[in-house]
Image (cartoon, rainbow, N blue to C red; front, side, top):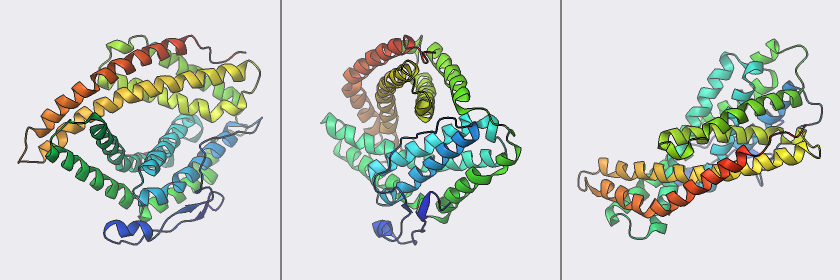
Length: 328
């Protein structure tokens, strides 16, 4: 684990916000972590998996101090690194499958779930401020309280021995886990593997985009997840395709996929905020209708944004469908 992390410290159990200053994980790249991953030409699938997954462990650790301090950007960046790690395990499943891979995926999902409410309620709080007169004063106060509680929960999750053990288990498994004993003696070239995986996932996504306007919130969310997985995977392997045609086409596909994700993300945020608006009232006996009223007001305030982002998503989907993934 020393290749990725310089120091791992468990924050002592200190009540309140003072816990954030009591102990942190310090990463070798904690100051300015970059999400870029560059694979060496001629890499095998084994080389690629170790390079990608090992880099992501460092990116997770790099955000611990920020999450301990309840920083919204740190929470967001750690969630991204966690999701990218889960996608990596899924993409390389034929190579690394086994009980330990499944266990670690569950652990990563658990941690992602502990951070999710903080991110969602932070965006909700920002939207209420931007929307002006949406929601009563009591409703806004409850959302702010829920937001603070969610950030406390996220902070506690990364201040535990459980978190430190997860990072250690991940790095040990990447370096010499059970999968390494059963992997192919002569691994497939990473470039060949990447081309096959990306092409298959791109074809599946394009088919799902045909009826984008007819999808409900949940169906559209599933399309967004598929698009996000492809976006992460494209980023993992982009450095292997540097030819004049292939590199440019893959970069264009990646850029257009990002535009689609931006629009789908805005639509998903609006849907999540409508759902969250009802939750505070369910726990408040004094204002049982506050959440429902705020949800209706928020939906009305988001109506123009939703129409705009749907148009942007449809336009981005059409451009993506016209973008060949590879040029050779």
